[in-house]
Length: 380
Image: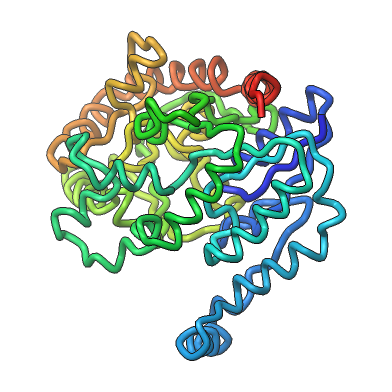
């Protein structure tokens, strides 16, 4: 098949592309590289006017004319490649807003893709109308919008998520759902909100290309290295402040027995280099399943504090933990970290189970085959 992957989050589409190519499919990836992460792409669209003086000019133009010049620029770049973007058997969008631009510009791009290719699919991967609506409800005891609902953070800090509930993005959601053959969830955080939706095809696990990872020997010696990568853009939706509070206590409690490494907004390649020596990785609190960064760390035998809720364990029929379920409770996090520091054999045991889990469930070729099966079986 000829497959066009549109947009990128956390290397998901890159890994899927690699798996599809192993299976003999022709694949093209077009994206903006996911902001500062700078993931590779066959067609890389440049985000312009997002910093410095040009960003201030952009804001002024938007206030006066209602035109977002970054969005216009990305759409213009996209259309320059339009002949390369026709005639695919499958087109898959990484998200309802795959280029993170204004809804009208996204609509124009998606309209083109829908008209010039056979089947259009959507991934629920990252915030979208359905997942944000679900997070705003009281369906679960916590969500990525807990800080919004309880007022612990200023509401404007959640604008990148709550925008999906505004009329323009709601209209974009309807526009896409009218044109897709189906929507696929990348993990439990997106599976749960889509249950019983007529367009929902099902959950397909995140693909991880294990062949490109360096898997170290799982040895633990003091100091225990605890790593946390902070993305200021989603700090408040990941629950990072709970980790920060816990780390302050751990630092004072264990001193020389631990080494704490915290980084911010690093490009993907540099981020990987920094966490390779860690024994424990703090990923996110307000989640029910693992995202891509957590899975890569698990594949390397790290003990990852992330989403690993009961729904996740039941879905995969797990009998022993493959990650630490990070809860929004500082005392709980301190206790879990303390247990690992005082019992380093547990780090090895959980790390070995994590490696085996990712290899069994998330191998990029196995996952790619699941995507192909779903794409072929969908009628439209």
